[in-house]
Image (cartoon, rainbow, N blue to C red; front, top):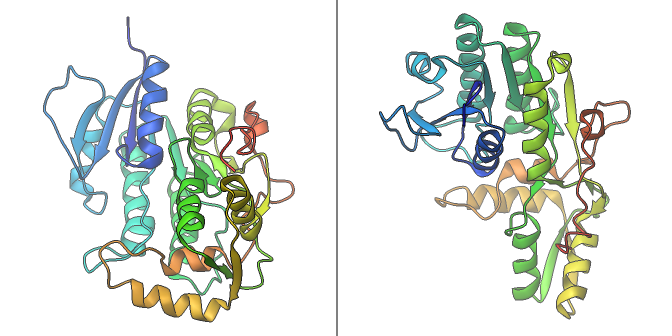
Length: 294
């Protein structure tokens, strides 16, 4: 089978990146997975793996060799001593955009997230916002995708909440539980990326990707509890306390909750009126209820 065009996926070993690589290969594309985690010199193997650090401009050219399109799936939800939100979401995103422009790569898709806000008190949210601005200033024709919280069939998002419901008789709720969530199936996001790569008319458009259903956080937990036959007490906890707990947890290698996650739950995480969405790409979003996940 003859392969067609080469697509570079930065962050191709991550939650979204792995699924995107699989779909691209199924569509008969050549794929380069660009990641800090692994590398190989075997260029006759698909996907080709290239080790890069998006903070280092000099590491990017090797990944973009022969590329028709590039996708930035790199994300950071917890800052460390060596990585900040600004490093990854602003500097790194800008480096990729500059390299894409300089190498004449025809299509660029940048993954951001619903909830960006330049005035946010969260350094994570501000960095995601600034990253969009930087990308657009370098590549006005870039496609920007803003997915809501992504779920999968193998446990991500709903599976994590299901574990909480099963093992915690008293479940803390974020604030007054007025925040609305519109979780989106990760496969739909991967499909959206593929379609924006293939459709030149999507150039320069920003899409907000939400799922088929809108929930409150408590509603999700109540559904999971009812499905498992559990009776649970729900305890509202002020966001100030959640933030304090997240700061304490930040000293852990893998904190169970981060300040970024707390801040994202302060406001609705749903598609805005008038935004381009999955349906504009011809995708009918999957329902978590119909998939038996909630």
